[in-house]
Image 1 (cartoon, one colour):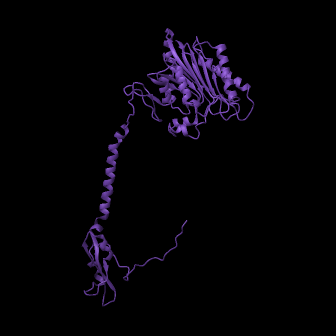
Image 2 (image 1 turned 120 degrees about the vertical axis):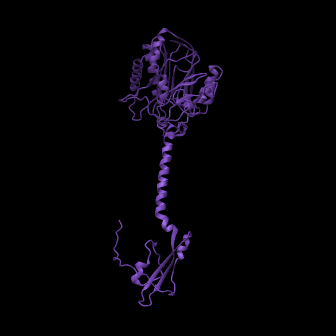
Image 3 (image 1 turned 60 degrees about the vertical axis):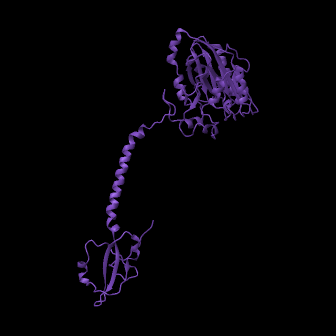
Amino acid sequence: MIIKLYTPLAIHELGKRDNQEDYIYPAMGNATHEDCLFIVCDGMGGHEHGEVASSTFANALARFFEGRVSPDVVLTDQTLADAVEFAYSQLDAVDDGNLKKMGTTLTLLYFHRGGVTAAHIGDSRIYHIRPGKGMLYVSRDHSLVFDLFQSGEITYDEMRTHSSKNVITRAVQPGKENRVKPDIIHITDVQPGDYFYMCSDGMLEQMEDDELVQLLTATGGDEKKRQQLIAATADNSDNHSAYLIHIESVTREDSDAALVVTNEEKTSRCNALNIMPVNARQSHEEDVKMVPPPYLPRENEPENPIRHSNLRKWLPLLLIAALVVGAWIWHNNRQQGSTPAIQKVSDTIVKEDTRSGIPTITRSTQHSHDSSENKDAIKVQPDKSKSIPTSDKRRAQPADTPKMKIDPKVKKILPKQKAPTDTLTH
């Protein structure tokens, strides 16, 4: 395919910083419609010589491409890897040996006969946006907060305010034994009118992805959109730089059929931000909806699906189990509590045998529903009836007589007890 561009437009703002650590290639105001290579690097803030790292790495890549790569042939991953290795060697040459290493992020776009190659390291981003369709691709941030979001530890909204939002997990640094390699994406689905937008993280300080999509897909020329981006980021504290690249035309060739096999854009989009376009039936201009992890929507799945298949499968079994357990508990309680619930001790008469002087006990029961009467059920009565001889006590007591209660004030006949023993508490 042959891709023709409108004149690319750059943004290169200082923000509320004392020095500019971002670096863009081509330099501000130098890009033309004939350019094929675009780079945005963000020097690592708070580190020594961040601007040296960003400019050295970007210029080294540019020199490699200008001397060894042609847009008339398909760019291979090996050629890009060689370019990155060359840039690392140039960065190593300016290393001052400081323990606090300088560093930079990387975003790279290259337009060639095989489509578009995108590569990035760190939290600077690359977007592929199509008016009327929305966001087709956005690079995955190599940052701590994005890893926490992907693992479900924090929400998408919490990434913006998290205390570790400025911590990146990949960066280009000199003097490292294991050099960080970029994520490489091949994009062959390119159409006239598409936008490619690459930027440092400072551009996104006060702008969400959906706001960016709306701005770039609105009516108006490219310069107007560039001015709107500058106005929207005027109060940003960090350096913010970007390139806005608009596709004018795409000429298809017979050899393009072989490029579809190597197109990884769809897979890469799933591995980047979890995004899905709003269904066309809901909006004439499709927007972007954030879908929090761990759930990833399947293709052609309705928006906001309600998944209750597992609940519907197990709910009847859970209800049956609950009923069985409840019935078993009710049956046990009924068996254990039926006798004392119906009968109670209403009177206990303690009498003293006039002949032997030994107290004797008689009991009577009656049905009652008032359990509070048990409190006064035991009373001492005068000796007005004939007492039951001690020898006949077993014969006089019914077999099903409930456990008797004795007033603690009345002298009781206690069984022999063992002498108390001491207990040890650990």
